[in-house]
Length: 424
Figure (cartoon, rainbow, N blue to C red):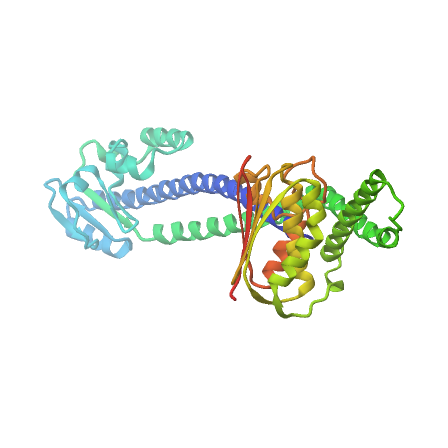
């Protein structure tokens, strides 16, 4: 799988998992809120049963309150506090201070635990603190509450209450924590399963594109093999051709054939360098770039003349440790692009200094979007110029190998500048 395919898969997966993750967060948050509310309502119901038991004991021992309180301490194991009708504490195992507002509303919250007076909860279902904590129960819970109002055994005590019984539930924290752990686990598991399914779906959708790319690569490799022999014959025939008795028109045709053959030779070298990098001489040496650059300028001089291009050079001695063949490939591609995308009668500026090579042209230029993609494989500046779109990709690969920083600057209609920077 190519790097572009991997990047495409990663981007699609990130986008898909991101949107799915947001959806799952919303879903699990509502589910958590509902389940938490259900736990609270369930605990309130249990506290109501305990409160009923305490009321029964107090009602049974209404003439002997101390005996009733003693039985409560024996039978009831929940922390609770009992106020009489004068709001005086007559029994306390709660040991938590409650302010007047909490006593009046009949509910308090301490570290996730509920301290509640269930009978007051029945009489004051719209208590602000209770409403904010429970967020209003579901309709079904509401119907159950209405039924409990009609049929609850506490109803016989609550019209003229002689006592306020605040009970604390210690189990709510652990249940909510367990619920959070379960939901987090299910969230991660869901996201993991979705990620696996998404990965294979993306691979499935990209498979036809990858097959086309592989087919194109195989075609280029096969073509590269097949083009070598006829190209060598053409170049050899041109070099050995007798031109003494040819007319100027015939000489012009020969020159055109020679230029076309050189272009084809340059394209062939790029294809070989890109598809068969092991076939290129990899031997590094202290390379005098000024000599190599002058040699390549001489090679491309017929192309400059054909397009009436003015070439301005500022060449100083410059050394680099690299393969001569690979550096020749870089220079050839930069010069070829400067010619190919230039206008007729335009100019090319070449600057070589210590640790710097810059090649500018007065061609069509590129937009910022094109500059961002120009080093990608098969990307071309326009469709009416030749080539496969691998020249700059090859340059980028060689520059990365030798730690050369390549920079591209361009403006539409004004031309482009490619600059190579390295440690000299």
